[in-house]
Image (cartoon, rainbow, N blue to C red):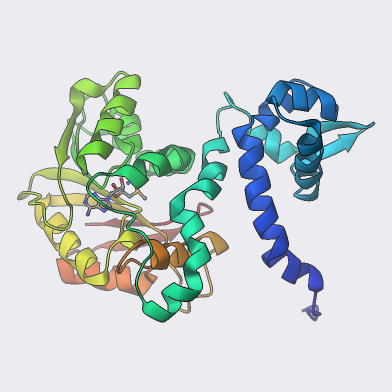
Length: 333
Ligand SMILES: C[S@@+](CC[C@H](N)C(=O)[O-])C[C@H]1O[C@@H](n2cnc3c(N)ncnc32)[C@H](O)[C@@H]1O
């Protein structure tokens, strides 16, 4: 193995560069810089005009984007990098332009107060509250990530071939699971439990996919809501465990187990660390700091934590799958 040498570059990447890139990319997305560049190489002046910003600022922004590797200089004009062209241009199949704008959300800017949080143990803000306000801003950014997870889930469950499956999505958010699962199986009916304002977003999203007639919503708090008895063939609990305490997850999973028909399947996705907390990816490891600052007791829990809750809830077959996506998947019966 090659010996690792100390590197100032790695320190810069983890500090000044990370901070500047975060806001540079978010601002570029806000002014649609990547979308403007998608139509062909542009000069600074052309970009300033198209984005309706000052040329001095346009130059700074483009310099920063070149530094970040998202824009390249070609013959004195600017072009998108392959990543920017694929992920940051409006109208492309996968658009992460809303996601990179998270840099401006309180959910992330509160991280500036991390030193105080480490002393007090108290969060600065409350990510999950029943007016759903923070989620309404967050969810559009999450959509492309969730879509990839739904595709994986549909294939993994062979969902399209199931006969009239009844599905419950606990903390369904934007309704991405509902929209694409309902489209994949015209006999499915999906109920989503989430806060009222979040469900309103979901109804709009699911409606825009033309499948609202088979979509039901329950406005409520998943930490206390009754989920029913042996009612569902599939229950989805996707990207929720990190927002909840260990006790809340144990309690929710126990109610979820009870709400599944015998032989029914739970699909759980989570930012979940390996048991030694060295992986499985940087994304997962960074989420823990977000949760520290924005939830009273949320955390990135380990694989063993999830297995323990599931076993205690009564699940017998528990299959855990680390994929190339940020989240780890669990299929349990
Ligand atoms: C990170 S989002 C995940 C959304 C969705 N499951 C997905 O994978 O796209 C977490 C969701 O859980 C919901 N949530 C968090 N705490 C909740 C609670 N106590 N009661 C109801 N919903 C809650 C949020 O409103 C949000 O929609």
